[in-house]
Image 1 (cartoon, rainbow, N blue to C red):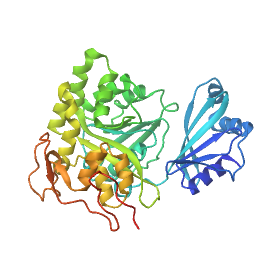
Image 2 (tube, helix red, strand yellow):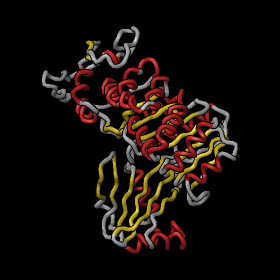
Image 3 (spheres, rainbow, N blue to C red):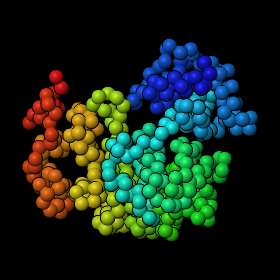
Image 4 (cartoon, rainbow, N blue to C red):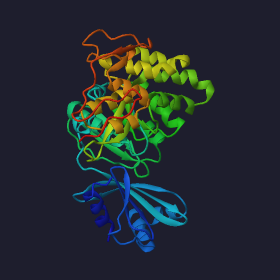
Length: 405
């Protein structure tokens, strides 16, 4: 089989990734699980080297064979784009191809919180989308850019490695630049972007202190900067940025970050209850006055999770566990999946029973009353979570619900 045939097979199998290596059958990642395609012929060394040469050209192929990993974009007609990474393992060429859908899904289809629509309309500052590899960061950013493109009149510059989702101009003018083709590195491209009359700048990833520093400067000078980090939650994201710089700059970076942060969206993908794919559990931090204070003052940074939990009704913030509870109540995920993914499974059990700390009471759980102040630590019984038919609440020992009959 040729590469395009393998990629077409991957898309038709609803795979997110295709893994290729010599002397082995192709492997697909489908809904998070790796599945060997025994029905397909094994990949040969000659196929891998021929494919790499065709995708890269002679000069870049020679770089690959000298140990330089290569990222690039590739398109198959009717199937969409693919993000390709080629690398050596024990001297042999291997490749991983990730499918980028041709259609950019809207927020509703992705089950993302409504607050992202408001964050996408901010005029300046910094918006970060974080999570592990494969958690849907690129898709969320693409949905945000598409939402801006339909509702704003701005110049959007994206700096990517490689370009993933392709955007066409609607109400905005969009300039998509690829590292390795259009510019040498993120920091250089970001500096150049400031002279290209941008309103919005998307930086595919903030990989180093230089890129972070320029991104903070861009946000300070009246631009909206969007980027990603491989961090698990909002608190870790803030600590990661601060720790990237020398200790003597900590106060300066805390001040800059506190001044520009508009939101941090952290994602994890969890398996849907119907088994048809995965859905994101999303932690959302919004740059409120209290959040900015927690970022600026080191002794208060540890309070960020409780501030997020307390800001659900007023600001649209939510923790991972609040997001999981919402997905469970909508019957998008099962109790077992939600509890297994929860940051604190025992606290999640209490939430399922309808017992919330007063610091995270929402308009719904409090019957529309005034939100309590964070940090009280007391627990309040509220209206129990909706329990799908055929399940029972956890026992006193915190056991899971029985499965649906």
